[in-house]
Amino acid sequence: MQIVTAAGELFNHVDSNGPMWVGDGDREVRLRVSFTANFQRPPHITLGISGMDSSSAQNLRFSLVSEAVTSEGFEIVLKTWSDTKIARASVNWSAIGQAVPSSAIRR
Image 1: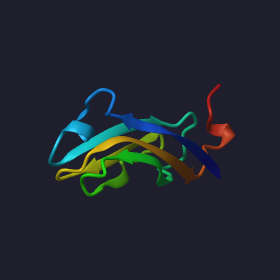
Image 2: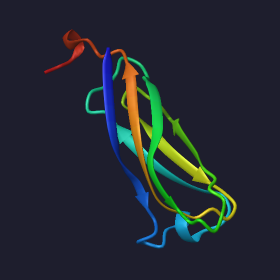
Image 3: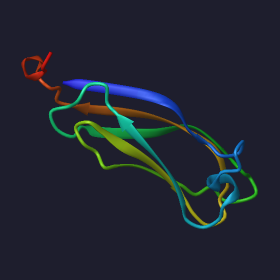
């Protein structure tokens, strides 16, 4: 069994006037994560919001999902829509699955 975890800022759009802060309508941020050690097959991914800064003038609408999960990595995707303004967001994630046997690793 192999467990890999990490946490950090997904984006900061308030400082750069990015689309999650100044845009309207459907918007998304994608971040590709590469594992330092591959899994035998695509692992189970769990995601969580560890911080979010948004405008209080609009409703907060978002979805957080993992996509394109492979044994080598996955994408974190945070989406929003309508007039929601998200300045920055931080996430934590865990990948849990079967490790590649040490006998299969080439040195």
